[in-house]
Length: 219
Image 1 (cartoon, rainbow, N blue to C red):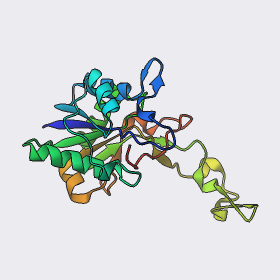
Image 2 (cartoon, rainbow, N blue to C red; image 1 turned 30 degrees about the vertical axis):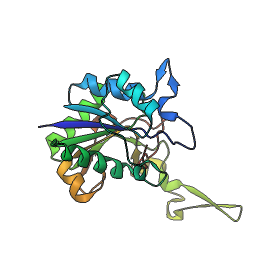
Image 3 (spheres, one colour; image 1 turned 120 degrees about the vertical axis):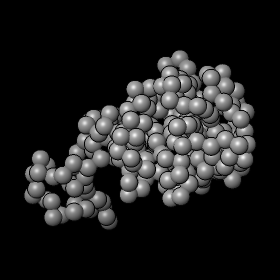
């Protein structure tokens, strides 16, 4: 089975300019994603999707391929990760290449590792999921969430006002590191998260003291 790692890294980040190549412990932050993908020995191709010459040069210096540049359409603030992945797969197909599985590894995930990628791949294979991504348990029960309206605080779900936190069902959030997908499912559903998605066991029991947040917008 053929597999491709796609690392999306556009150059136009507004909140943190050049966030994908900011230095983190001595090297560009994108380098960690590239190195983990290469070290995992899972991929036939490790590529970076970017619209930036600077990012492309840095990515190639760490061993990734940049066979083409991202279109202007998918480099703006409204493009999603799925838009970027579909464009990459379409470009490879036009050149005669196809892949059974695709792993989108975010460029700002310095704690990703080859073991985490391998565990994610094992999970999608063993369970025949359409997609798999790591999740983290919320540090505090979200059923006890508060809201502020007209400067007044109230519970979002007041039915749980007196429920003990240990009696509430656990809830999880996307850790924002990577997404494994069957290529066929991604092309069909155009989603990273379907009714047949699973969570990587490597992260499922981890604490969410280290928060990453959802990263479904394009990087």
